[in-house]
Image 1: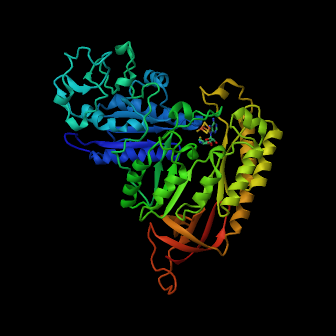
Image 2 (image 1 turned 30 degrees about the vertical axis):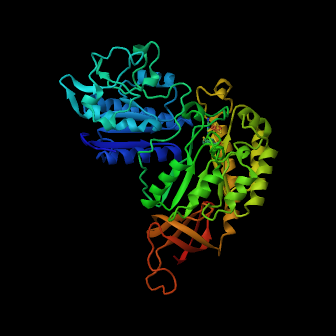
Image 3 (image 1 turned 60 degrees about the vertical axis):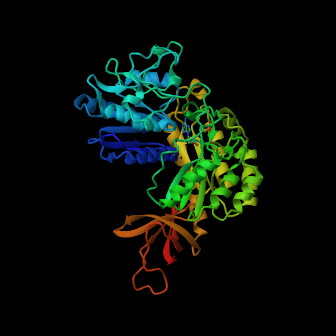
Length: 521
Ligand code: SAH
Ligand code: F3S
């Protein structure tokens, strides 16, 4: 990618939400750094990118607060650009509504279209005409329509930045926007001028692969399948992230190699229902095939993956993963509820018995595996008895980690039409009750680790009780802390650094972590 002619400014990326968002933000950061932009605080930035999450109401409110603050900042400063990405961007309707409410947003962008950023910055940072900036605003109805009044794009912008699917016009009404042809309707000029969205039915199969992600630690994310084809009644993700699109193995191999060259030792493969990987690709590779290919990369020590969906997980897939030494023994497999009636209302597509059978099979095929899950409490109509069934399920399965969320209405989902009848206080009570049961189970599970020797990939340091500790994870995804080895220690390692794979003997545990001493690197 070229950085020619793009004046440098300062950027700030604000991120909330899941690992997918973090992965996307890293990609945007890599792109901006490559363009020569410099990271700064939000106050100092010339470009603020808000990477948003809509899964629950709370993160969405945070983004609205940021947008309100940025509105004030923009009123004071003419050198501030605001870009919005992530799950708050859905279809044209959501974008139009946001554009109306926040006219100070300069760019709506899905990560798939992030390679528009150089063009956007070029236009906003390079004065290309006496009239001001060059803007991309709307397209004529068809390509044969007169473009007389529009200067040829390549006269103004370096050819390598030109993408044929985009068109341009000078600034109108002070609006500076970027819009692909795809969004222009028959009515053309009436199309909303503020967004980048795919054509209806258009399949954007991969990330902007020219943008190499920037690993910031020995662990890195690798999004392998975008979107979700399920319609769980509470969930906004499919409406905002679209249908499943798998990235081809070749493309992923190139990216994975690049991440490893830059220092990544562990890759976490990301997807909403990750076992659906490949179903939409021509030769239908599955997740285990991808892992087999990734395992060949020298220097890559560990492969993780999330999130699993029970019905897509075949025996063959699990058995093959279990035999790949680089694949770590951990599954995140959301159950959401332990009650059949609730699962049905959630439209999860399985019963409690089917879920338990799947788990039993996974444990049979992959005995060393640790399990985490996601649960929603207080979903529409959840009775005390139904909630009790979820507690019973925790006792039965004994997950290593449980992520609990109180149900939060997401406008536009099926469940939003139903009565959100569990009061917040009751949702919180159920959440705490569940966490309490889980803390007891997790502590018991972790106690079995005492005296074991765990392989820990060192990610970071951590100060606790005035003492510097190393922090990392073992293969089953447990957080492990251990102190810097004493210099006079003659048998163990002398010095540890981030990225080391250290053997740690576990001495103490809590429900959330293991603590021990390094015995070898
Ligand atoms: N693909 C994953 C979930 C993605 S959303 C799956 O198959 O489960 C991440 C988590 O957010 C979900 O597991 C769920 O527990 C939680 N979540 C999603 N929608 C929610 C809502 N409306 N209210 C509360 N929690 C929600
Ligand atoms: Fe959401 Fe269900 Fe997909 S929780 S992300 S719709 S599997």
